[in-house]
Image (tube, rainbow, N blue to C red; front, side, top):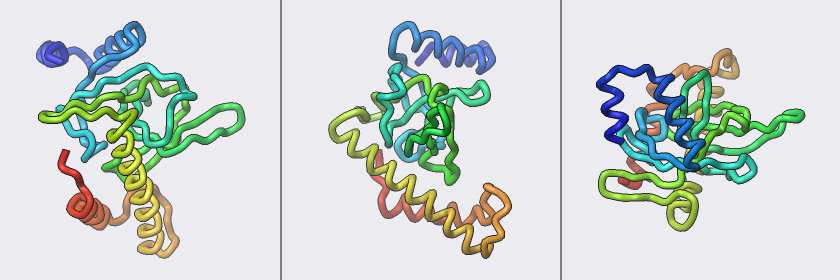
Length: 186
């Protein structure tokens, strides 16, 4: 990961770093990366390291954390489900700390997070206790998304015209409550 820090000091464009990282993943079958946003908080925080493995689309399961490419950027989010539209397969993806979910083409998934390395702990996400933790966070993430949609519908009395939260302060309070009640300090 010190390589990424050296590249940062050289001010190399993110797109080039993403392409290099993607090529390294393709050649080695697995690659370490560093988390740069809190969209997957609390399971992933800025600075955490993740070991990403190449994965066949058929091996991606609900609750898996995947890396996918959208608009030339790499994103790490959770898979909540799979849906076929015509001949193509899509995954429903969502960041644990966000309220919006979206469908992404299955072919845009380039890897699955196998290991999360935090400051004092390592979590294996594919099996054992780490898999149970992923299922728990998947359930919370999915439930919070449904709750937010219902709450927004009720507050706007069905006049929903946008996917953006009309009342972001309520959304923030809702997740703050989740953090206090359920959050495992990882």
